[in-house]
Image (cartoon, rainbow, N blue to C red):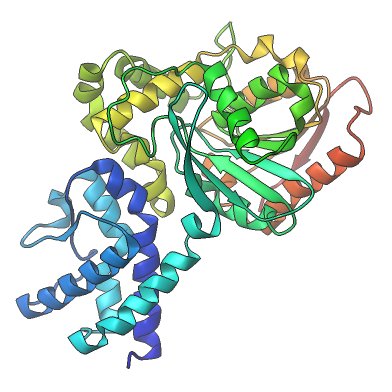
Length: 412
């Protein structure tokens, strides 16, 4: 029987393997993994570790993880390094020891529990077709009189919003989906529609699939553009908006961070055609890895996992960043919470301030601190702010005056 420390280590490993499933699938080739820094094993131990890794990966439905022989961490490809760091096999073996073959049944039970506790199980996942037949991976969780639709950042796995889904689904029904054609679409799709209107229509497709006539909508980064456009197109279907660190474009260009300017240059190139995406793929990956926190790298790097995914992602993202949101703002009457921070170096806070100033019924929450990624790794206090806003919006949907309210807080 496995000891307590061994069980805990294997639980962590199983949860980590479940969490890298989208990235491993996106790479579409064997992903080599090695012990994390400071760990190494003799040949006899490697066989036992490989057996453990294979057993858990098979139970988690993750195909393609390969324990590498005689390969240094620094010699791995970008995504292999990300996965190896996430799995932290060396830490697991140090804590759990070598698991004998007769205890692998217990390992499988632990892995099964990790799968059951994972995001894809908690938020029931299925694949549906958009209006034009492009596959959409959609998720639902919770029950309640109100429905909330989360619009993730373009190209990001829905699991990046897991803290939001788990918190809001306590007393609401929560729906979300992943960018069209980037998930659940193994076969070549050709050049399907990527314009911002098509992406906004996907929001209504998700609502219709779950029988939701109206919903509160929360948009993150480029998802804020989708949320705004949807609210302008069908205002009666959107009860309120919460726009977190939006990546907004304007006809005059608007304020942009160094990151946004660099991304615009790269996405413009990669969106041109598949050959261009292939040519810049390696450089794109290295730039993103350098600027992505380790704790979310296995999710945030998904749309860069292969040249084909990069091409599809850049077409979608370029369409969003090229959308002039200014032309839609006057047509968005819903109560809207616009959130940004002064030190967000990913999307420019002045763009969010400009959006809030032009919306008829906006409430701007401007914080001193809180980087872009912190919106996705939010703790309960931040999530409660979003939930409380929805409650207030449902109770008092009309504006109190003609200008946005500006509150300045320090996010802890």
